[in-house]
Image (cartoon, rainbow, N blue to C red):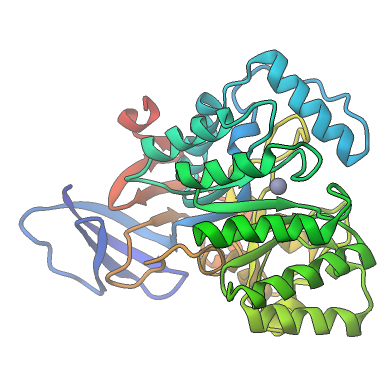
Length: 400
Ligand SMILES: [Zn+2]
């Protein structure tokens, strides 16, 4: 791997510096660094330098990115979408390996170097989607860190055999155990969460639970999740995705739940959708809860929307929470950079010597300017490799 010296970039909008990259790591950051004899030099031209972007919640295996347009005529209920998707993927032969690789590469071209993806595991598809996504994780391993979540999209209890498949998924190499609405989908939250936490405990893996349940129902499930997190000593190893109930319940109840989440290191992951009441971003952060941003699904049987551009997701989070001041817009970016990495447990992250060299250069004056204008990624460095220029992947990566 060649040593790389990037001249004249402004980390998060600060004064211009040079960045030396060696052996896949940031070796030095400072003004007017001397070029080692073996270094290739890139002129940054005063670009804004961001750390590699972080996608905290997507579904690479579901996407139809690059395929013919999918005509969405799906019913409005959650279960309609679940049943429709499973039937569609079964009938169409939708290939999770091909599709997850296509979308992961699109993320990489736009500067996302760390990514958490939930992958459907169910008794119809078995481990097919998981195995396909694990192939993508392996193909991109040197460039993009992908965490694979084994996700029971069709429920855990309703379809016997699912718990065994989740157990096998972790044995096969899934990084995280997923869960889904223990009341609304499984109908028996105590049993559902006992089974789920039991599998995670057996494999000593983190948990990330999709919790769409509203109001009192969601708060009830969240209480059970927090109880089990504490009882099993899983502090810092549990994430709640969506957590819409935190946007519904009364302020006092919310504050109690947030304080417990903060104490137990339970992370909140949100796409900040405009269609639901969402957990209040600033109140969560002030309570000490790490809030991570993510797209959720991108162009799949659930939604025609989404884009593998984490600057765009930061902008949508900013819009959803009415973030206008520069320091507020920087918080939106934080959910897809530092807080994202912290919440998902991605290590060696950030623009500090010794960390993994994941760098994104854009023409923008400030962080807030970058979020609202979502400029072309001039240069993307991932794990010390130049992977994209001006929004286009290098040929050898595009052909992976
Ligand atoms: Zn999701």
